[in-house]
Length: 195
Image 1 (tube, rainbow, N blue to C red):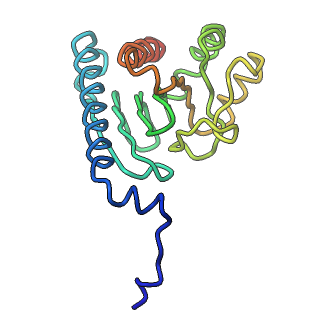
Image 2: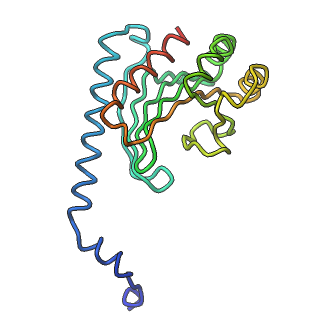
Image 3: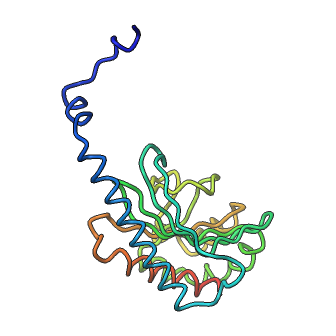
């Protein structure tokens, strides 16, 4: 049989035999969904800015670049070329992040507001997306650059260059205890920018 030629290393076999690993992973993901549900409740309680054009959505998956993730999208406005998303994200083994994503008329309406926010974006460690694919969320240099690494003029040119705008912040997973607050504050900052 072909399967008998496939071998597991000792460390793989140890993991393969340990059900607690998957049960712990599932527990962490459920707690993350609960954390984002708490953020969702707070943003719905404190804003009517996007009602009724959009409702929040929490989704989870197993394979963003091979690893599990959980996202909260609100708003999630997508009509034709027009796009307005604020995405709060947990990515296993990597980070929590908050991303403002705009395209079409939402992009055009907000380019100047975002350029005016350049000093705040620099001071608070935000990044600007540079990849042509608007659905990449990793923070490698091929996808994001720190806003502080660009002059205001180059920042504005970066916003104009792509058919979409992505501005993001990230925090290490070790900041679990403050993640809900950080995601909420970043969401509120983005929501005020596009108000």
